Image (cartoon, rainbow, N blue to C red):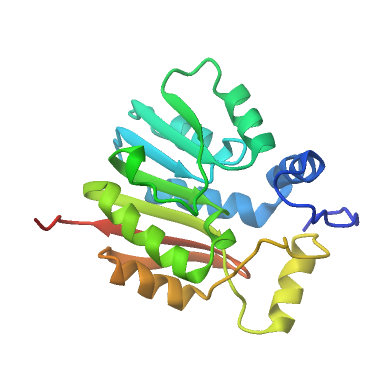
Length: 219
């Protein structure tokens, strides 16, 4: 799938060398591109407010904005300083995008209300208990008929399958921060949080696209 045989950096996302290695290769991962295309396919037609959880260099935010020009306001958050620098550079001339330093281990309630929340390969860095809390917070921040779309790294069924996945994407090791969870567990947590129409709409080995909606709000 990729033609490189370099050692996978494992210094963490505060390390500029690891961020450079990652951002240079992601556009060449065919499976990731397929997942991004599926994400585009499920986006609402005219979202106005967008939240990107763990925006990295802004790749996913830029993709949504290019496909949905109806977006008037976007908040993109990350806790990696090198990633934030890249995202701020990318959106320096786009007044719609507010790039914020934010650790997803902290509650997101102060970020505002949105009709579309996306995340790309970020939430798997959180503990399972924090994933569940975050899904609940996402429901609280979504407007009625809002959509949550999570393009993610998920746990494989066996260690052998996970090793095959790593090899297929040209990696020699996991990120030390990875805390991968099975798809079935995450879909259940999304439903428990109050999302409806929850599903995994696409999967390739350890990559998956999970979606959920907020159809109504109590209280």
